Every structure is written in C-alpha cells, then in structure tokens.
Length: 64
Image (cartoon, rainbow, N blue to C red):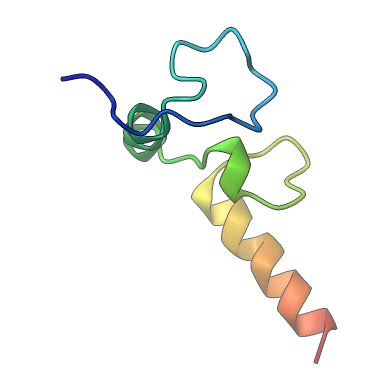
C-alpha cells in the first residue's frame, strides 16, 4: 500500500526510507516503541516513549 501522507519532513535522517512518509514513519516508530523526530522534545538522544514522558513531566513541573 502506498503512503498517501507524504510531507516535507523535519527529520534530519534524510537517508531513511520513511523520510517524508508520515504514515510509514509512525508505524515503524510504534513498532520500535520510539517517537518520530517531529514529535519529541529535547530528548538528549533518547527517543523512547518513557524518556518523552519524563521530559514532559519535567517541563510541566517547572512551569507551575
């Protein structure tokens, strides 16, 4: 099935087969329990969902 959702991609990995193919990218990252570049905040190189939530928690706890 062809990906109908092809966009300009902010991800720096231009050599990735899924670059610009949002639906394929999201599927790949869901299977690897990680987040696409366009969805994570300053992650210190860790794209895991756990790290994403930890960063969100820090962000909202410091802005109370």
